[in-house]
Image (cartoon, rainbow, N blue to C red; front, side):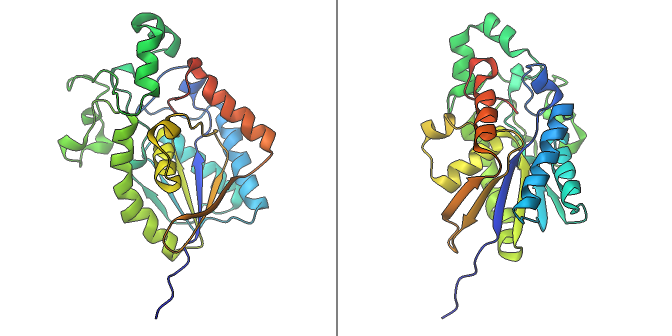
Amino acid sequence: MATARQPGSLVLLRHGQSTWNLENLFTGWHDVPLSEQGEAEAKESGRLMREEGLLPDVVHTSVLVRAIQTAEVALAELDRTWIPVRRSWRLNERHYGGLQGLNKKQTSERFGEDKVKLWRRSYDVRPPDLEPGDERHPSRDPRYAGLPPELLPSAECLKDVVERMLPYWYDAIVPDLLAYRCVLVSAHGNSLRALVKHLDGLTEQQVVDLDIPTGVPRVYELRPDFSVQSWRYLGDPAEVERRAAAVKAQAGSKSSSG
């Protein structure tokens, strides 16, 4: 009887601070680069992986530049910029619909804090849709030109992100975990929360309450059936807690847009 193959290590990395994070704006699918702090966080994540002997053999990112930059900076620190790269819109941040580009504090003042908290912190309530003709709609972005129109969101809740992320987990990440010793996924607060919900078997409320710190590698060791054997954050626990608290404090909400 054949023995099941042991999956490689899985490293989840939330991108560092972006320029819109710095300005306290809803970002979603809008494409913005890392801030100077975000670049430093990405470099630090590479150093932490190197110290742990975690050398990625393949990297998966979203198609948004802040996740791409984070991976590139971390891999440069590891001298691993030559490894295979996979990119997918299914790893994108949650689409914040009509909130994208708005200041979080001003949005709370305009719509009411309770309403905005519902949009941001609930599992299955979407923010207002973007109109199809809005220049912010993904149908206007060339990187999504090859996707069927019905796949392009006008707004998403966290439940939507879970549902569009899981096919990529099964079809792309799982095969790489069987083929390689270490797989890096550089993505966003909500797409990574969606993956953690699946891996850790979190309830809807638990995943809503989860705060993933920016620029801190979250490392999983998986059993042959892809259940979780163990997971840990790399680095100083106090710094990990500080960054998680900073995420939680954004606009007084537990669910940040990354």
